[in-house]
Image (tube, rainbow, N blue to C red; front, top):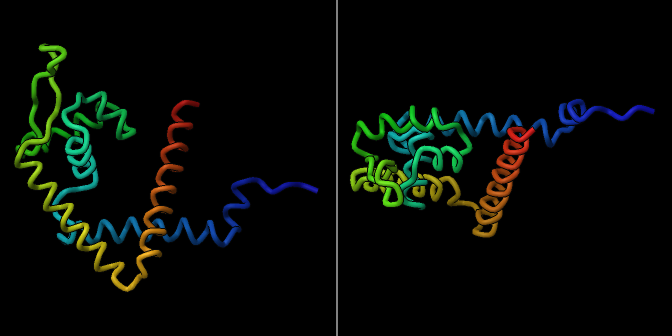
Length: 159
């Protein structure tokens, strides 16, 4: 008797088949809402960079890249338009006067606050008819799924 490969099992398992489909639909719908102005004008990369700087304060490119799970050149490319727009600024690193760190500007903090408020309002609308315990469970399961994705990615990068 042979054991099916993990790929074959994943393709025939209705839960995994439905999950991958629902994730693809979610990604498409989120992009549709964002591009229509429903979540503000920040793309995903800009949102995550601004949010990271808001939560953790100024950081160098390498620290941001490590935190976001991308390479430094990606952060450099993604942050350039944010600097040009005045949402992110360069500040001197207090530990090394030759080095610079990226910091959220007041304009960036305001823009992030607008986007966060818009996203929170959208989530409230979308989940309005869900019982509070289902809303919390969905959030907890989605966070757990994201942690699994992060672990998977980290494991593949280390291999």
